[in-house]
Length: 299
Length: 334
Image (cartoon, rainbow over all chains, first blue to last red; front, side):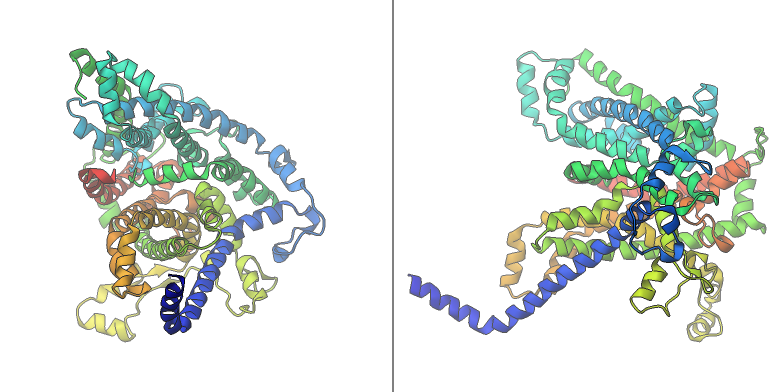
């Protein structure tokens, strides 16, 4: 048996020996491509860290790529606490958290409710209502900004973090409904039928079956919403006019647009603004990717 | 599930708050914006005097700066979207193929490629603005131009987003003469060109979103049965043929999604422009979304801003509505 195998192998390998080296070159090329793109994707982040760690007297635009001779976290301190030339971002970082966390929690709750009904119950007009809800996540928000400002003014939420939180909850409804609808669709209907035979009703199916099984869906929605809300700029700049209430994206943009702010402080501020979502991504990458797929309608 | 009478009502009640919010904040608001676009409102104080389609006429067929700016925005959109799509599709698909070929460290590479997607456009804009600041002839190069110097490409000194040049087909050159002869003379004007400033935004946007395209393609590749690939190889197909005749046709739905989603992102492009370049020299990096915001909230010409917003909505809808219909029809895709 073994001798036979050997001969078969020899027969196969002999003519393709040359091909094999070619395949090895091809594989090397794959790694080269991968490494080149690692450089492309990490270069800006590398520059952010590099610049943030330089001391002020080493910060020179023409020596941007030189390694720091001494390490200093002065840029980060100034970006966070502020300096004579710049208001610190610490306050705005806190604003972003106070807005993004409650908005994410409420979004997830609404998403569970909508997803449950849309995936497991038939109600009149559901086939029309679902696409109408979904459309809300693709519209250019420019088309609702004018009435949004007027309405928030009328209900005294304009300019406040509460108002911005509310806005994020409302415009997060479509994507959260979609993610939970797709997620709940994977829970077998037989399970619900069985529970019904045991006397479960609309509410007890939700509280006893759906919610306890929701953890993965909740993580996906939480990451997706938190990231989007944290990174949002358009709503933030439209709704919060007072610098004391502005989230970090707006504060960063103001700081970066100011000519009096050193660019090393701008970079430190950018890194601070990016840190929470990068951290989430690094810690919970696979869930992040699942939200990503939902964002393109592919559950 | 159908349920008893009261359960149906309970189901409706559970989704009702969301439906009401969407009805107001999406549909009624769009209606209101549409209404504003038909009025005279052009200062901080609302003025609802009805003027019909005047605002649209001024933007689309006028002779003023707003008409010029509108068509420059359309030109920028076409140029930006073509390059951006091309870059994202090639890089995204290429990297997905690389990751799908059982290379070592696949998880690491995948995480790095997707990392920019977690970052906001504002951060991206701030970093790339500095990376693509060309420096000056007197004081030397900065940003990536400095890197070019290090690797011996110092002669290559693009001016990136500070370059006001618009590339277009000149009427007196070969192709231009030909277009002139076949009655397509209008194509030989800067209106049908591409501004050099756009390339910088494309580089930053591609940095941010090509990993996303890679993730979509990778998921698609992983869903292609292994047997299919092996069957093709047994039949003598080489790697190129496997990609060309098996992967690409099977991944068409993903390509379609990518094209629609990225095009709608480029129509809505606002944050990146704000943080990176603003309108640029001669509106070279302006976008419709940016134009709308400035017209409405900076210049307080609300009615005109509303008209731009509605045009923007129509353009996005042309892309999205067929896509939604298609996705919802093939329920498996949703």
